[in-house]
Length: 109
Length: 115
Image (cartoon, rainbow over all chains, first blue to last red; front, side):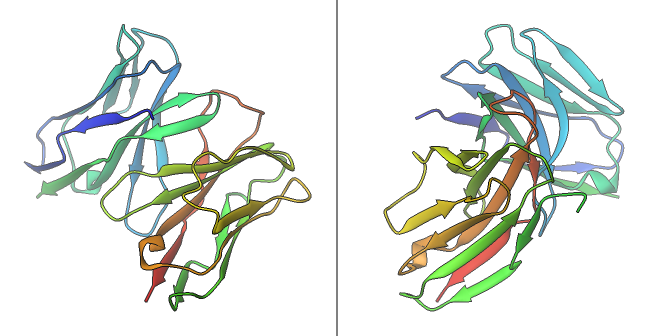
């Protein structure tokens, strides 16, 4: 079936640093989504990307939908302690999401 | 309610026991999805409903798993004769439109532990 490769698996950074994570797929997706999940909660949407090549920002977050529609990246600038959590990419076709295995972000004050 | 509600939040089952997990989607949302999230992994698709119709159940791992949404709103995921490998968080998500390529709204999940 479809699989997403998300990297890195984990990151330990200092507060104020920038962060970058990405996802690649062997399949094409019509929409790419980035979610954040905190302990005991369901994933919460951060950014949605609908067109190949699209670059979208949401505050300190920036994400891009790759031209080939098989990849996406998420950047977080000037990280703060509350950015801690697990970040998931998801490719979406006909409403059904395929998720990566997540990037666990730890931010040291 | 304002969001997707799942119950119970936590369930401990003895191996071989049957369990039923409930999902209340956002009112009026047409599409409803169930996902299974194992520890340290991303959610994996189980099944999809459009109103009361189960359109895709390709992700259900075995015939011990059964899902229904009889009136097109609340959904129940039932697992019969639970096994230890069924231990996971079960997430429910809903989308307002049918098959729309928009983001899903997730519930908090039910953490199932089979002992």
